[in-house]
Length: 146
Image (cartoon, rainbow, N blue to C red; front, top):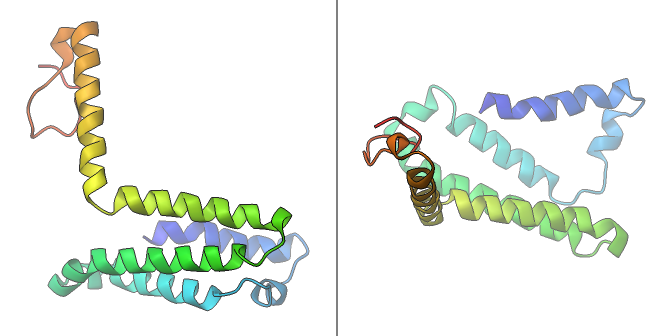
């Protein structure tokens, strides 16, 4: 999780290096930025040691993750909605990407996608080289010698 903060930290360091100011970044007209910062702080606390080893944290973690993604999505849509058309598309594109990522990462669709990929992979490899497909459910991938 700490590695996910690297882009934000690099951006904050780059702002003054390229002639900008942190005050201008904070005073930008991005509505809802405190919600995003709060959600990131919550995730940072919940998904890093020592908190991530707690039983209650493992139980509420997926729900918190989903709620934070919905907050992020709301902020992106809220910033793209009243914006002039030439400036709205980046907000909508980011919202679409976040919505699709949340859909895939949230549970049931992941199982279907993985199962579909494994089935296709096995089918294709049986025709290409029959000795390289495993039917063992304990293996993560399908590219293992049998």
